[in-house]
Length: 387
Image: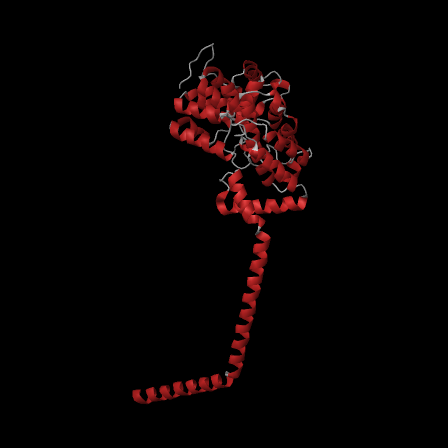
């Protein structure tokens, strides 16, 4: 869509940064001003895919100031690309304010959610969305990989901006939280300082101990059970995706919590299930020590190296893998015994060959002398024939 210039906003106004932009303009910037819209869209998309967090230490050609230049082109396809991939706050605010519902969802799925707590316009807007419980927009925020870890932790614990969110909306958004990529693998925003990320993971684990399902009724209870099952499977993959995953586990006594969930399992309704939660808690109870966890981490690493990392670690598939891996010790012993037998046979063959060689070495030497003699004789006959 094209944006209309209303509320006195001039789409062609000059930002202060534009002067610096033109001073150090590069070839790629000039190209962006004149390139076909489809190529500009692909460029923005490729940059975003290569830099999901908006940090680029390698390619210094991209400059956020070019986004205001692109916005002035007011092309529908370029506007869509900016809504999906833009990082410039002025551009994002303009698109969010002047775009329709689709463009608002695009902005909330983009880089701008990483600016929460910085006192910018998005802080005010997210509070209004939470107050009005705009689920269609809030689900984009909780699913977004760029959303700050501390903000998601507040959502899980229902604190600060999320404190007034209704239980029904919280249970519904908890289901969308399962789709956030940072909960499927170890993906802290700042790997060197993952304190907030660990805090978010710990807050999710705490739900399995603190959640009171008896206070939830009807649809809310089913939603929370579904979300906790999916989150349990996801968090196990977070643990298995880093060698330090054992520190990402829960702080509570897993055996006691697991027993409580197993007792709860018998009192659930027909359509209410918690098998995934019980299975993951039981898995945690068996992999509490570092040595056992490290073995499982290595196994998962080998599993992913086979190119199956896109396959979800579901309960049924995990059971098949574990059944195969549980008998790995017996398989290794069997293979070692077979290898030892083969090595013995190879040694026997080698000894027989050596014996045969040494017994016939004199015969071989005589054959070599005879062959050399024949070659000399043939050479003399050839010389005589030619002469």
